[in-house]
Length: 379
Image 1 (cartoon, helix red, strand yellow):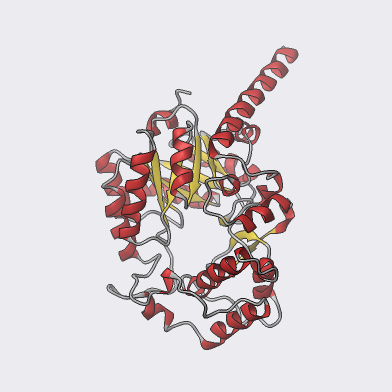
Image 2 (spheres, rainbow, N blue to C red):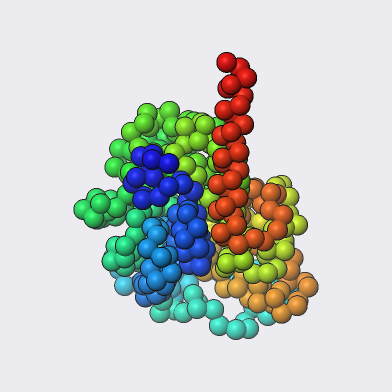
């Protein structure tokens, strides 16, 4: 395709794949899609390692980076603060709640060492950390940089513009899209509530045409949320989208960072088995429903903490849950969860990323052929 978006990104097929796994990013780009590495939670040194690996494994194909620098964060620290400084703000009652929940599922809450518990580690989601991550990202041959929560920092927009790199932003409502256009972003990702991870309340079917209408052709709009097939992608483009931004479909691939236990749960899940919960990050995020999400909504819950404090207790806990479940702890399996959208109901097996890209291309072409035949019949 020779569309505006394809020219901007240097691609022929406008299928973007968001993933926290470098293997997925590289595999999708090599297969003809466009991998986007989700860098939230990484340190600058870790991001440098990951992007250097991607550079060496994409065969020169383009890829992008997605950072999570919240525009609005209720808990902030001063420059130079550490994870330990943030951890000191977590109430004892919340730690006790998590420890009790894990023990009821035969998971030792003190066993093992989780890297993000390092008290000297710089806080995730803080502006200062985001600036350092940007410095790393822009040293690599990325073809896109995106911000996931709110308007990108001015420094991101300015650096991207100087380097000729498109800057994207995710939106979940029309008014958010209008603010992003005024701020100067180059690409919008209209993400419906069906999406995994942080999402709003408007469905993809309604949000995409609403955002397309709002921007009036000024910049390309990608559709996101529940898109698991090439036919869905074609449908979104029929509504005016320039392509698809996908995430959940890559979690059930052989290259994904997800655990075998979670992949099994994805294959078994139906679309109604996901829930928007604050129990993982402190902000509403869609994930597979589990004993973990149920507990935070239950009568004994102390209530979730604001971002990023909730992550300080959830991520170490979930790491231990996954370790226990993979070691054969049947009771721990009930807690296993991850960010995934309602499209999980369409997951039937665990193919490779190349197979998924090929299926998208084939189904997309079939959908176009079907529409062409309908048009010919009606002529």
